[in-house]
Image 1 (cartoon, helix red, strand yellow):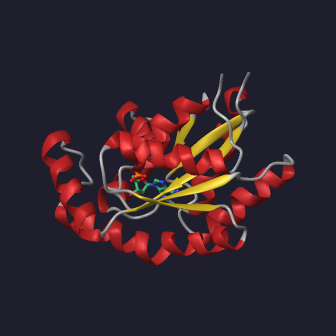
Image 2 (spheres, rainbow, N blue to C red):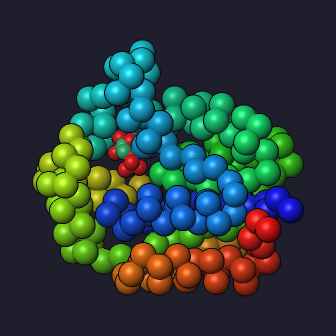
Image 3 (cartoon, rainbow, N blue to C red):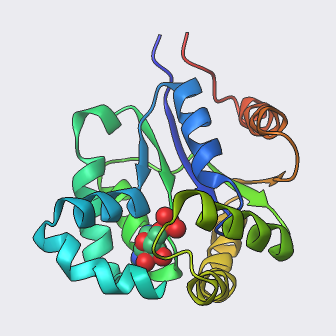
Length: 198
Ligand code: AMP
């Protein structure tokens, strides 16, 4: 049996959404669609897109909406996303929500659930600073971290209201062990009738 689930995971940088996203997507047998990963892969390979977005990522700013949405539309049109996907890092503002809604509606689809990982700002900063020393990501400087968290609070948090109005947001406590948090998410999705792949 193939599970079908169209999911979005949202949370501030350092909330663990990347790690949890991979675990949840694996449980459902669906691909993770992470715009941050796609941009970083293009930068690493030196593609024209990568060259275009390098400085934007280093500053911690957002890549223009149209460009980002086009990349996501292309990705979601691939065969492996036909039965479901887990979006990580997109949509990141209300304009992108409009773009995604329009794309999904064209295909007779909609998001099934939005997983909101709740982590206090101090905890996010502590985790990001640790990651900066461990992984050396070029956008993990103190300044870029603070800037990304500000963008999250001002531009990304408002998308939660849009999805809450549709009744599809599951707010999950993002503090705890990796396994505990995964369990919380899977339990919330099960309540929505989203079954795991057999
Ligand atoms: P992330 O890995 O999700 O933290 O994303 C890393 C960086 O990629 C962000 O700081 C932005 O510069 C860029 N980015 C990722 N997703 C988006 C998006 N949906 N819209 C615009 N920029 C994005």
